[in-house]
Image (cartoon, rainbow, N blue to C red):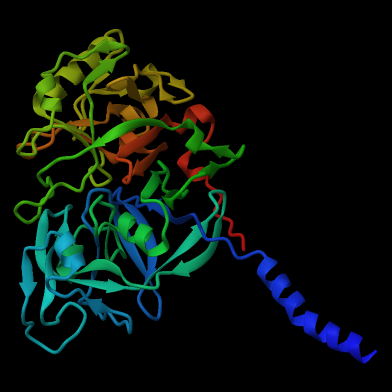
Length: 438
């Protein structure tokens, strides 16, 4: 009897160890998400992240081509986990910083520390920048399985961001206190998250056309499932290469800094299947960074170099030659009475505009090509980029043209996945299920 007790007591720890080792370990999240809203007054796309210790919500305008996240540090930025980025450090070098703040006038505080990495903090809506401190702090995001939000997780190490000034909030949407920069550089928010959570270096964005429903950004891997039928739009993606531009096209940058914006290789434009006659050399990116096609969430409508704009509008009007035009309403030049165009599943009944991308095409249907300027009038939602300033980039695809289109930016593999309009799939970017699951 004694020998049996000894034998059993010997095996119990082994059994316990076996049961613990065979227990299912918690799965590591493959992706994270942020909800997006469209601000009615400014047409900016807004999201909220949680930052600092203790965590504080930061409402941010989304800029697809901005180098990094920045927030206003003037208005009481308090955090026990705030760390300035030192001069000469790896994050500083990889941010292409051209400045070092050796001494800051005033007592040490967020945005004012000695021997820190200096950067330019830029607001594209007022085309103004100022110098600021590069720093790191904790960020918390909600994980996802691609169908629903899951639990919040915080970064162990800080995410790099810029400390901006209050005056840079001018013309940002009400309540916004910074910009979420989604650029493809090392200090861009997508790469920062990929490094922090060991997820794929890719993100996907889906902008809702409505101010009453939420779009979504995914960071990491698919699936991307939308209601009502549980459609995984990752299975509908068509891919085209993302191109390098050797020169920054930002409004503020350091000499020698490459562009962190997302360029694609448009080779021609078609309307209703017919090639629009344009100078195709304008579609190439030159060695000094001019030309080409990029995607923007800051420009509300697609901007075209003047000769391309004139050719496209002429071809579009010709394709609707039997439909009478109405008086144009700024900033648009080609307008029609809504009732004269009719409607389809993918918006007003107008000829599709096709951006040819080598062997594939990105088709812009009526819901994305036309803008309702009032209850009665629809206008072609493209503007002359040469009116405001001499354009650096020949085609800037604006936010209206990508609403209810699903775009995946695969930074690691240098490619863009896109769907064209989700309306063909009987869903929209506002149909992600934000009901949380544990």
